[in-house]
Image (tube, rainbow, N blue to C red; front, side, top):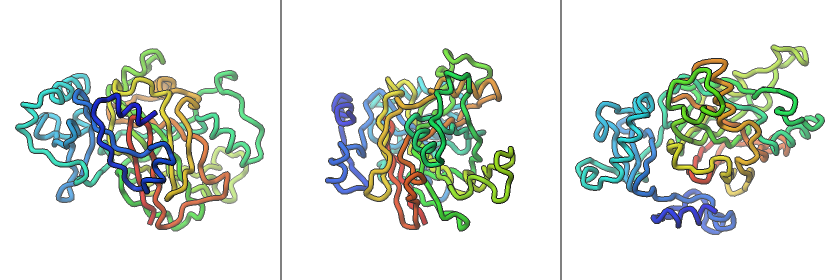
Length: 345
């Protein structure tokens, strides 16, 4: 499917990274870098001289936002004026004469930072894939969960801090000293492009700028507080489990919403080293993107740059008793978005 999509885009530049060629072909060419078609772009942030630089990737080159859109030099600036900047960037991507005037760099020379520095909020959906819900219920010897829509149950989300948890594509994350059960979770996330409050589900996607990938790293042995009363509202430890430094690798960039025709049919894969661990599709999402954004907007105001992660599919380590160790490399591939890699130290 991905290779077909690449060929149909009219411009293909295969740059398979991080895996042996045979490994990738066995996984149906799932990690590859696709050249961006002439009318499109990707938003990213990279490090130069130890400082963050907002940038746009178009026509297979990286351009600094400070050069091409001087009034919006960061990705967050672009998102704060998304209605106008998306049009300006799309027009620029078509104009080779204008692009020729700007300094450019090759994508393989940049050191990635998280695309948005830093969102007002990161909101993460839990138990939001049918296959993941089934595997976790089995792991905890619980009965199968009903479809929450059928019983009127709303989405379940938690809040993640931003500045300390976010790490860019290719980054390194230190496994917390207190955790011996360190797990991975592949997730697709939406990035908000307009201030959003009390929006209907039918209108919610109008407030989304685009898509990115996160790895919702988790300290499974600290899901609950030791000695807390079972079932107590104070039983869960969201700080130790989900908010340690480096808990939220994010990237590699933001793909504009309109570039993905069917976001509810994207293939999802995650490897630990050379072993495929997660292999699913966004069609298994329980609450879709619009439902999550609408629900959150009924509870709080979403701002440009905010990230809403949509939950993970089956294939996490906990049900199998497999956990990450120092030196492991986690590689995520999401159809039409790209790849996100993280090394554990």
